[in-house]
Length: 410
Length: 189
Image (cartoon, rainbow over all chains, first blue to last red; front, side, top):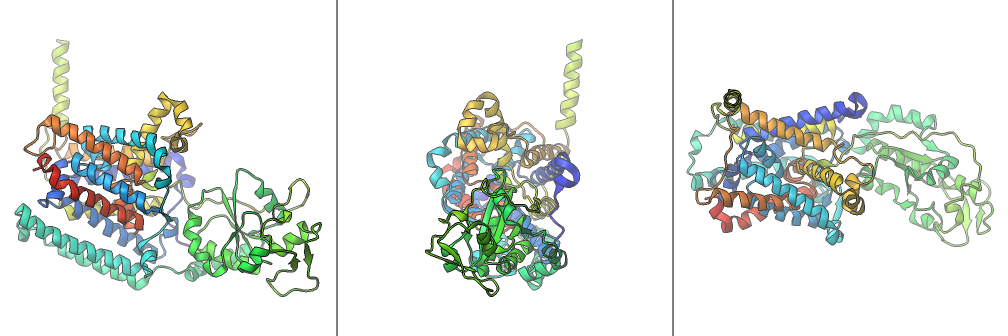
């Protein structure tokens, strides 16, 4: 599995990690300053077409960062599933963006650049920063008034390649070409509105553009690792976990976890919908096996104390689903040992509405019949933990796969 | 005597920080490539991108939590950041933000751009410019929290990781600014 990103906290401690973040911030501030982003006139000139520095710096940074991130992912160095990708709240984002646009042209900065301006004693930067503090304060005090809208249009972790339904490499290449086209347009605008002589611009920029297109083509040619490839790279180690049964939780432990308030248990039922309707564990989410990969990005956004429990009639379907989640770096995924059948054998004996079919049943089929499709309304969907004293091996071991995240939203 | 020494010292400090030769900014494509490298480094090692407004947010909430802790514990949005025994400054983004301040300062100082001045268009007074800087900042701060991240946390970091929401937001920022630019041209041209 891809070795990066690394869990800084567990290697160099929390304050070591904070030192790394301080250095990253230092480099960020330094680069913003040398780009001229501490200067409001330079920033505002963007919107009068005299100097397109903002667009050039931003889009160069985006395409360089993008090509490197997806390049490192293609080479198997970086696990993109473990990096923070801003979840999409479409309309709140657009409204917030428009408000920021107003702030940008009226005030001449954005938050990051105003910090740099204030740090270099630009008095307008200091006033802007004070204003930003005020605006942030105001938001915290007023968000309750429109929190339904603020939480609307949520699409989770949703990337352009998923939206367009094309391989990531094509999007990477497309974004590079779009940026280069915008750079060309910007230079034409600078020539017309800013009177800039383009033949005095450094020729190096053509080499840089060529290099970026080249790298994007390489990213496209290699392609992003598929689920099957990701599983291949960890199969040896993970098959052993299945063998030693450290990936299967016994019903007794599951019952315990269900009532442990420090843990968040997410039960995923991968059986056909008809069987799910007959009976499932309390709060189980129905997700067919062939769709499990589509919810991986939602699972990645769950808090670190979440335990994912996969259930099928016995263990076969759940194990297949477990392989997908494990390959996709979803932490703390487990299989219900013995599946739903074993669960019912343990907990349903006093319920006359549930009857064992008796005899041998084929693999991964339900070994019980039900009077009605009551789903989780049977009391054995959530047995009373005080009624049962079950012995079990403690196999749950919470694993942290990524450090504290939250993007710039912090 | 002591007064003269102290002014002499201040002058020494002032010239140390402020009287360096002012150097030109670097080429925007080069600066952008460096910025992209910094962003990639951040994602590669930590899994997090860059950000700025999140840190400012936490600083404000930290102050609120000192002044009116009961209010913080009653407001849902603030509880997540500073409710109960949560320490709002105990977050990676705060350290990035402090780093930005330090990095900006060191670059400005080394390149002779650390200087008390007001950046403004030729047709507007300093006082008006500062008033509008504050108003603009308030809009920016409000919008950045509304959008769950600013130009750094959303447009740059979300843009490079291909987040749909971040791209929509980025176009909204440019749209909002271009839409209003004509009406506030006196501020800048």
